[in-house]
Amino acid sequence: KPTHSFAIPSLFDGASLDCRLYHPSNDVTAQKAKGAIIAHPYAPLGGCYDDPVVGSATSELVKLGYKVLTFNFRYS
View 1: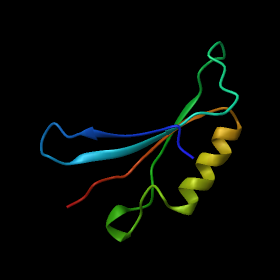
View 2: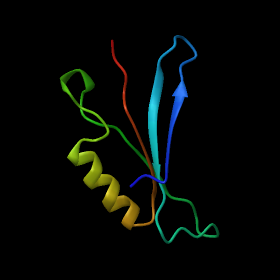
View 3: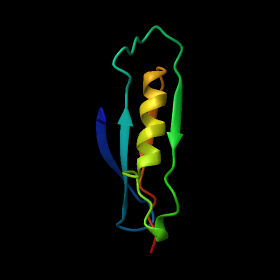
């Protein structure tokens, strides 16, 4: 489950970018920070941050101590 969910507003139009941030449960601030950004498959063909591959990759990286950011691409 994501630690934080938020939206980043666009500077160019009214659309926003939905984001999720995951922190490992054993997060120690004194440790050297490790992070990853995971993008989902091609959005016009149905990809989103709920994709099972995104979830699996996120889960494995969080277990390894990474902070992970996922987001939904937008398209028109």
